[in-house]
Image (cartoon, rainbow, N blue to C red; front, side, top):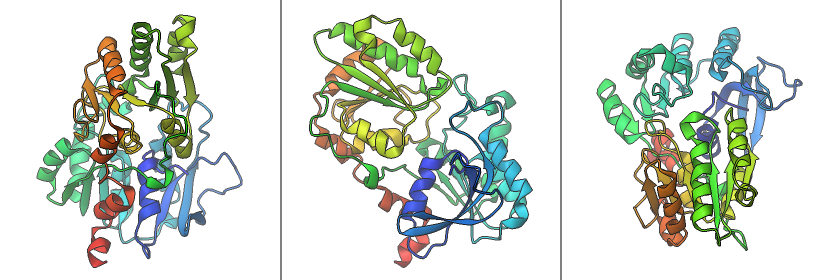
Length: 367
């Protein structure tokens, strides 16, 4: 199931909520099966926990996304099946549009979660439709924040501003899930680079390929490889970019497509360096970075990607500009960093601890 697009965050909430907390999810069915009826509550087993799930829309993730945002399909489903959604002790929303309709449709107290930087969806490198609507996104954000009983912001800088709108705002880090963190492979590739993200403009996968091409050229004697994990509309452009490289470079780049979390963890486990090339202003508190560092991968990231200040320059990784040559040099240098110090930098961000502290503070203090 997909729950409005912030599914990795919600998986953590579902997996690590305290015992005794009843959870219900209203979302989008991505199973690919038409046997699961829309608008009917059903039990879903997640480990030892049963969760109620009400699918209100259905999408096929193997097909192009199209022009209708997933959040619009979710909202249409909320309107259609709103009579089947009971009053809850609290309602959690993770997007401004979903938050707006949740506030209008349901009387339960709203916990509003913000996953972006200030104006992060409005910049020239954003792929969100909100960039076309001027300041409307921020005005709605502010309106929902002021009416929420609690606001959770996954970006330290933006949290300071949001706290002025609502003092019940907390700044939250993201986390890694120890249950799906794979140990290093028995024979990891000491020259393996891994990039994880959507193949979209804000993540700039083409810069990752350019940086790797520079690395392969400058260190031609070394067997560097690059795995690109993720899917998106830029895949044809990335494929063309790779095809234009010299054959001895292009054959060392693998486009893995979209992978399940356990398979992403496996790809990290056999790598030596994590590469992240997002444009500044877009990331909230990037989970892929926390997960990579938790696996011991020194990280090479572009300015504005490490919004949580996790990377100590030259110790756990490198923060660089957008010059492929600079990124290539940093990747080479990162290979020699102490992986134990990388793990130490994010050791406090384990999901069982962070989820309970951020989302269930009353249960934590009661326990």
